[in-house]
Length: 296
View 1 (spheres, rainbow, N blue to C red):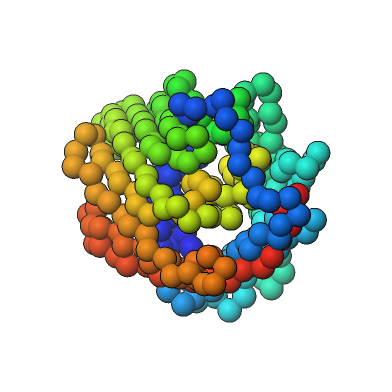
View 2: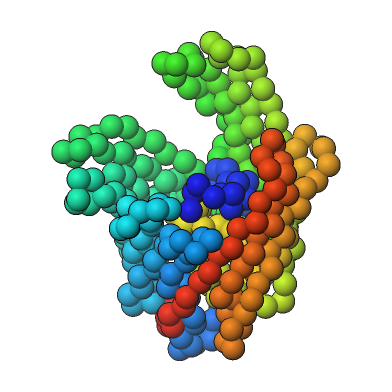
């Protein structure tokens, strides 16, 4: 999935992962009690299977990913819960015919801040590196900022020591993501001069219910873990357009059109992405199958 142009939009939605709210005095909507909501079972891109979702006890417990052309799933996420909320994950990759641990993620919530700590491992369980990211929550537990306003010192062997500032701020209309502001700054490196860019994005949604949103509506940590799939999690109704402008330039708009089944769940989503940043215009087709899940 990450090799398709959807990921440009998903990355724009989650360059760091996301959000800033103008309304945090309303409660998050939820599915009807004891209602088995149709949730993703499988996803395919342009006819090629890419993702498979496993649920247990009303929670997403595994997410399998397959690279285009692969005959087997090349990695899977295993989600860990504490007190009914996501607290960590493990990523396993296919290596020599067997799955081995590649990344271990844990979370810590302190007040209105969430920190995600990650450890990467090589063959034989050798620890390669550690990292962390952070996000800010409002009182409704929506993610209102991802990244940090602080300057981060980076020591990179290839680029040399330099500094970066990167963050996103999101605006909601109650529970629906409406706009995103993204900022990125990098100081001089060995090979390039300092650069600074900003992006402003706006989103529009339909009035047709999006059940996948309710999987993360009460669980901001799980939403952070599912950043690759953020395009499916922008609100309780389906996303129809995403417009983005760079450095106050003209906006370009990606559109989403759907074919629905008798249960008002889309079975086909067509993403029309215009030419941008030197990349040609593309059309991407997602197809989905569903499984009923009583959300917990």
